Length: 309
Image (cartoon, rainbow, N blue to C red; front, side):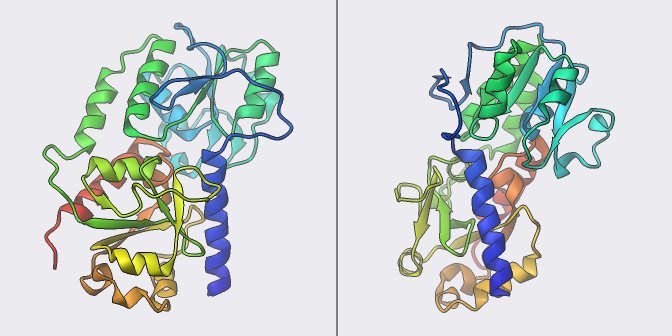
């Protein structure tokens, strides 16, 4: 059991690392423009009128499809869309976290390729060298999601407002000060999001008192900090959110592994049955609009329910 949990935690760490870090090896110098919202690009802002878009991230594919489904001609494969009829006939240029097949991308004759910073840097640079317009994105807070939606809408001459209006329905209308909360994305080590991550920003939108919000650490993963069992006991959170790794371990297995830890039964959240399991997509990696909506619905249930329920 421990070995399986350790391997799952390691895989989760690698997933976050790939999504959050910028590739620095075997890559030529790259000029990037960064704005405060977290959206970055390798050239200038993508110009309007793109008619053939290839999306190398699931979130970008989803946004483009919802803005104008006729504009997406290629995408990365994702389990999030396995049963989504919108993408049934859209060619896949990669699967999961594997690098995109550049021959397939070029064969689609795109006039815009959208990648995710930290994961798509090298293929995006190679496509630039071929003269294909590209754009790198980074979504690490709610505002960057809104700005990305506006930018992509402008790039394909679409109206972003209906989608922006939908985003607003995900958030609580009148959030009240929430419970002290620990979001646990890994057990070995104990890894939690601070305010500089998508998960941390989402917790803040729901007024959760994220015990790791202002902590800084030496974790190689930006926006996440490692905590000791002693630190968790000291904070004694009222709510604990566990994240199932993208490999999809069972909820029961996840909880059973933690119940064996000496500190686990001493926590308020455990004693009051305020431990909730969330999917990796939506809370840690935005993934898709539906995944974000589901995570927000779960946060409302976890953070706004009276204690003892």
